[in-house]
Length: 240
Image (cartoon, rainbow, N blue to C red; front, side):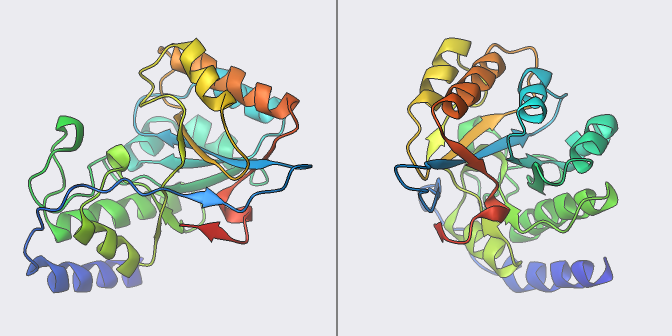
């Protein structure tokens, strides 16, 4: 913990003097190595931003032994201790990764992705990242290796900072639920279009929205079609 705090301070000071860039915000894409025609594979990544847990999705994953990488925020961890323990009891299925401390976009500058106020400074971005990592450790999880910021949009200098802090940025190639905003049928259809090597993003923290039911249906459909699910930690080669 002391090492992380010192590293945070060093990078915050080093980058605080950099001018904010006015670049277009970046949405990184990510694929995994394809499994081939006989065993196509996808990585299911689920964001837990705040709120609760969507058991329509989680229960299917547990019952069908479907691995997933779950990006958790510090505030979601604090509000869902029972679910956190359930996830930690299935280390073969669930990989917990960093979604930040308070779900603040990793943007240095004043641009507001989807109208959400960004971290704004290098120091604030670093605090959001490392705060999320410390929250996972306090909850009993292993040190995260991946970071996905709120909105999954980044300024170029924030991407460089994420790398300097020792994390990989978790992009995706297929957006299943558009922030849990679509209908169940649309979410299921979008997942149904997955290709071998896709990294799917969806949300597992919105049990009252229709999209979650579609995510569960889409995942089961891929499974019935012979798709294999892998966690980001289980893939040897990644195309970033």
